[in-house]
Length: 253
Image (tube, rainbow, N blue to C red; front, side, top):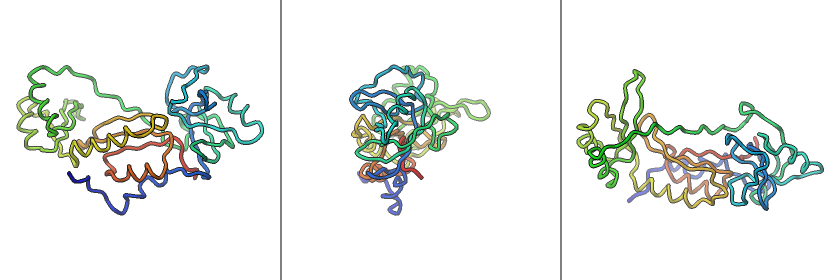
């Protein structure tokens, strides 16, 4: 099966503004924590609550901090448990810290990740499962979710690779509540992206997930501690709407 269509003009450059290279000035935000073997690091900062005395394993996804300059070590230790913004030089997968500042969520220069709230779960009866399971298994239906329309009416949103087939099978179940959207990609396309995400080292991958846009387009979500050029090029091979990427440590601008 062919790869999803990609704009050749943007394939290699889309994520370049997020790429960190050795010797580059960098900035990162997060909650300052202790990390086994590494010493100190930043976890993705919206994670709460956070016990101040907690020691994370070395395998945890954190931006590793290395104090640079006199007094910097004490300055970092004094802020354990705080939300901070750290700046410095990026080298060998670590942020060599020059400055560290306490901040609030509103003061971060980086995008604050918004935790997606899953829709409420609804039990699926056997009759519904009998209809939907073959659609998922054959890749006709990629996603089905309930949402409330502006008028307060519940809608059943489906992302499908074959809209007529999905409509024929699902209309008897959902009637006028059904909204079926044509997916730009197939289940195999998404599986290729899933394989790339799964191959990212756990120490760099905060989280992954999936969702569907208001237009019924299924996407994947990836939160990284940092992004290098090789991974940026790999991820850029997938269409922009297929992947929502957020990165904790970024080049300083």
